[in-house]
Structure formats: structure tokens, C-alpha cells
Length: 429
Image 1 (tube, one colour):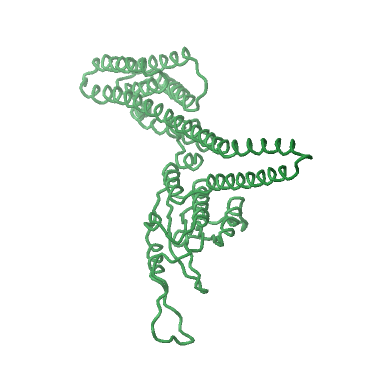
Image 2: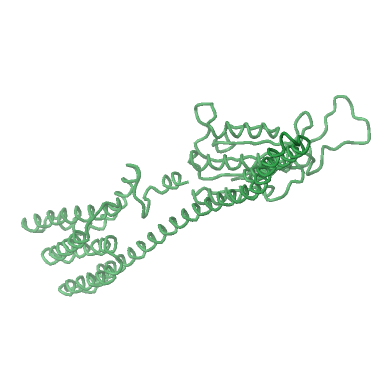
């Protein structure tokens, strides 16, 4: 689920970029705020400054922008930076901003806003909390030298203080998000380990007693031979019975362990799509029970839902996904339950062969006497997956019949469930 999430969020707040596109997105996020330097740049371009001030201004501005960009970009890339080097870089930016503001004019106080953001972005929160007010105090001290002191304090001191503490809050939010992500991954690992332990306990409980009994009876039968063959034969018969029962128990345990349930998979699909940022529309029919749906058929539909949602998250690039469940009557009057997963992503692949997931899904559905159909989704031209499994008994009104003898060419009207399925299909995602 991480790949679609990163593709939708190329800035990767708090994460290291994995592609050039993501690195470019981070660089653009830093560079876009340089638009606030329009005041100093305009002052340099208006031609009213001396040559010495212009040279000082351009060289200082280029040095400031380069140092600021390099400092924050290395921080976003999670490149190693020594604490002393980071503090020195921030101090150099502050001294440069103060020198330019004192030498050229108060318009250059806007540089302190960038210094404040850099301070909050690269320094620990405990240090940034006192450094940002200190920078604001420097802005106030320099602004008091100007006749329009009120304008400069409002235009530069408040943004310096506000942007700095806003960045402190963002850094705290990023750290909290990373901690939550790590905690979620740890919970998933613990859940997997717990499930393995549960299966191990179940197999131990199932087989421990049976294998011990088989061992004892085998030793007993061995001691009875060759003097007491009839008693030995009875022991062998008991061994056969115990082993057959143990095999049945293991099969039931493994089957129960591997067979998913539709309700559980639906909950997992909601969580996966929500994490990937895909809007989900669920047919209310998926929330209801279907009395005619056997355990094997439900397991096949649950596998289909899992595989389809996995493909939506990993490969489709979709923004919306729709889950539909409807009852279908075939021409041979067979009753099917159809699960449809539709998205508005990139659509079916150009190569018309199934991957391992869809091939395995076709096999699972075939074992349940069902089938799989794939193609383009209606309206969106995305990808559509339809999984069919038979229903043992109708869960809604069967095709209606009349008391009069039907003609040879007449066909039964469609069941009410078909109308429900069509209405559910036409809902806008």
C-alpha cells in the first residue's frame, strides 16, 4: 500500500524520497516560497542602489538562498548532518540576513522568516522554541531603526514568529506520524506472529495426543508380535482409526485457518483503500448475509475481494473504487452471486494475460464452480473484476411463474434481484 500512497503524495512529508520525481517535488516545495523574496529582488532591480550595494545584495542573496535550500533539502533527504554544522549553518544564515537588512534596508528583514523556518526545520524542538523568539527580537531591533517601524514589525516580525512555530508544529506532526506508522507496522508483525503461534498451538493440541497414542500402540503391537498376532492386529486397527481422525482434524484446522470470510475481507478492504487514499463506495448488499452462500463459495468471493483490492492499491493508480454485490440468473436458470470491483484507474493491461494473482483466483473460483471475468469498467474505463459463485438456494424471489401453461416461446421474466443489481451498478461512484 505504500507505493500508491507515495505516488499520490510526492512530497512525502517526513519520509525520504524514493524516486527522482519525489525528490523534485520536495525541491519545488522549498523553492516555491522564494516568491516572498520579491521585495529584495525588486529593490536590486530598480536601479536606485549604488554599485557596491547591488554587488553586496546580489552576492548575499545568492549565498543566502543557496545555503537555505541546501540546508532544508539535505534535511528532507535525511542525509547525515552534524549538529555543529547545522547550528553553524543556521547562525550563518541569521548573520547574513541581519547584515543585509542593516546595510541595504529594512525590506531585507523578510530573510528572517526563512531563517526562522530553517531553525524550526533542522534544530531540535527544545532549541527552536527559544531560537525563534530570539530571531523575532532581532527583527524588532532592526525594524526600530526605520521610520515606518509599525509597518515593518507587522510585515516581518509576526511572520517570522508565526512561520517558525508553525514549522515546529509540523515537525512534531511528522514525528508523531512516523511513530504511528512504525507502531502500525509493529502491530502487524505482532499479529502475524500471534497467528503463527495460534496455528502452532492448534496443531500441537490436535496432533500431540494422537501421535502419542499412535506411538504407544505401535510399541505395544511390536511387543505382541509374533506371539499374539490377533491382539497386535487390534492395536494396528486402533492406530489406523486414530491416524484417520488426526488427519481429519488437521484438515479442518488448516481449512478454517486459510478460508477467509467476506465480512472480514470487506473490513480489510476498507482499511487498505482508506490508507491508499482511494475513495470507496460499498453496495449495501455486501453488508447483508446470503443464506444460499456456502462456506467454500464465500471463501472464494472473499479471496476475489482481497485480490481485487490488492490490485487496485498496487497497480491501478485509481482515485475511486466501487464494490457491488448482486444476484444473477443465467440462461440455464442457474443462480449466481456476483461480486464486482470497479475502479477509475489505468484500466486493463495491454498484455491480455493474467498475472499470478488473477490466475490463482480463477482456479479458486473454478473449484467453487464459479468463474472470473475482467475488463474495462463502465463510465470510467478503469479496471473491472467480476467474480461469480453459485447460490445453493435463492436469497430473493425466484423467476416468477403463472398458473397458466406458458407457451413454448415464452421466457420467464427477470427476478427482482436483477433489478436491484442493475440499480446498484448504475450508482455513481
